[in-house]
Amino acid sequence: MATHYQSDVIIVGAGLAGLAAAYDLLGYNKRVLLIERDLPENIGGLARKSFGGIMFVGSPEQRRSGIKDSPALAWSDWQSYAEYEENDLLPMEWAKFYVGNSIEYIHEWLKRKGVSFLPVVNWTERGMNRPGNSVPRWHITWGTGFAIVEKVLRSLEAHPSYKNLTVLFSHRVEDLDRNGGVVSGVSGRREDTGDDFSARGDAVILTSGGICGGDLKKVREQWNIELGKPPEILLNGSHRYADGLVQDAVSRIGGRLTHLDQHWHYAAGVHHPEPHQPNDGLSLVPPRSALWLDASGRRFKEPPLVGYTDTRYLVERICRMPAQYSWQVLNWKIAVKELAVSGSDYMTSIRNRQRLKFYIEILLGNRNLVRRLLRESRDFIAAGSLSELSARMEAASLPGVHIDSQGFLNDVREYDAQVEAGKDRATDEQMKLLVNFRKYRGDRLRLCKYQRIEDPKAYPLIAIREFILSRKSLGGILTDMESRVVDRNGKPIPGLYAAGESAGFGGGGIHGKRSLEGTFLGSCILTGRVAAKAIAKH
Image (tube, rainbow, N blue to C red; front, side, top):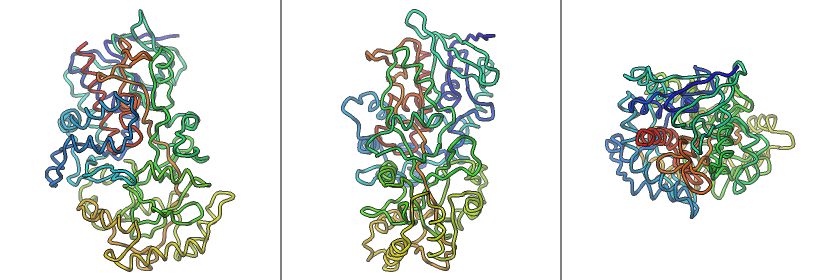
């Protein structure tokens, strides 16, 4: 038995983009039907599980730290990192709009809802072979992405027009319905009962995510050949319903999809100790004082792999190795000071806003996190000597892969000798990066001071077996500067809008080949709000 719904605007997907659009539409006195495929406790999608970092340009937090930033500087960095193609006109327009409007459209919007940010701005994606962020821009939300979603939900519930919002859960949208060339609604099936449903409205906004989680087969089929072959073991760090179902529906009615081979994967993924989906993974924030090794236990050199530089480059180097996975080797002292997980479930002191506990962790290290990962994760190994660690790495190696134990010992001790030589005499490229990182106050807080690996005072030794983790789609539905879906002839499809990851975070690929980080959550809010404004205007 089919159920029919009616509203002014239909939003497909209750992630951050959908919630942002819904909030603003209520302010425009629109009746909103928000259709979500998942369960009520998972509203907010991947944003709810995220670290909560957002890129702002010219923020109050930057000014208080003496960081001089501007839209012109950010746009220069963005172009360098994106490596746009000549015809990427709409992605470039969206990027320029982001850097010029991140404070008004994102920062101030969140602040009005009670969202706050840590006072120290982080400096991610500085670049490797090409410049990335030339100044710190990554603002971590106090409370992680969990707090962002909770604050937005509370604001929705307190909205004077909240009665005009209807939310449906466990409803899977499969098709877009057109009437006289205008998209007039959606149809699909309930996940819980299998019953059909349809919904009609004056406009439809698609905010259901990308293709990097629900169907890893699609990720492999659309893998970018510049990264080498897709790895045999690919972990899923995305949403279980990010399967491209809505993108397929757009394509069927003539909408244009672009850059589907551009993904944002992470190089330091580990198996989730409590998996909620097949190949479920956690994305680590890789310690920069650790040594990054290939599957045989030999260090990546010329240049060495180091976190906070160029995520795409890290993924490419690992994917082009025969075994397509890697190790990071460190010790307890480095781990408690530098290791983090890109997820709210593990960064509990920030998520729960436990200020005293958080400050203690900054000063003394996050011991609880490292103990938990050593206890729960099959990809974490501890040992009391390098030879013992090498043997345990060998035991944990995939079939057909072996640790070069002597080469492993030589590489670690060669690096340690560079640390012993001191920062002024070291010639190692990783040491030079660490020296540069430590010039910024925000990095000094999260970095050991030139720590040897083989240091009995810093034991136990730790090895982390890491796999490529699929996270976000950089491509998607092509949209114009009003978030309207564009057809194959370059014209907007009446009544149809897309925002967030569904739209490649703006224009079908706002990031080009790389993200400066923090632009995912930010773009969800930005594009969702633009869609709401355009619907109100039209």
